[in-house]
Length: 117
Image (cartoon, rainbow, N blue to C red; front, side, top):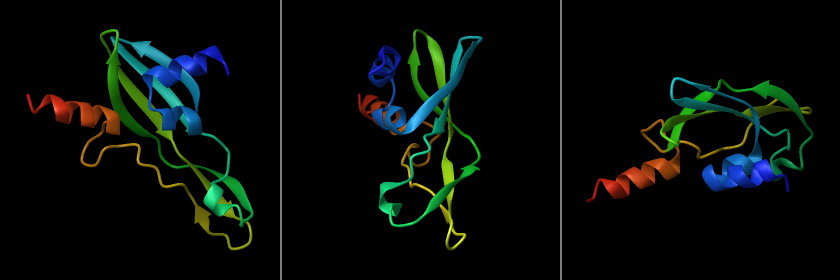
């Protein structure tokens, strides 16, 4: 496995690194922006269908844990497929964002624990 992927697994949610590809990044005024696109692998539960890649959903932006005093924002583009036989749109159901927030589930859980003290 590539060193950069191993490092990313230490600081970012594993689901993100496993199923998404880091396509770019930029740092501006104390903020780190990481841009991800879902990999082209079709969903395993849809293997019985013939799917073709059909673009991406609108990008979502999620705040993650800060790194080295920099705010971290994850820009995530989820893929969608088209069933060749029926024309039906297919997508994975991801739980990337904690309900009621714009933060990753891990950040929201961490802040929830902190608020108890």
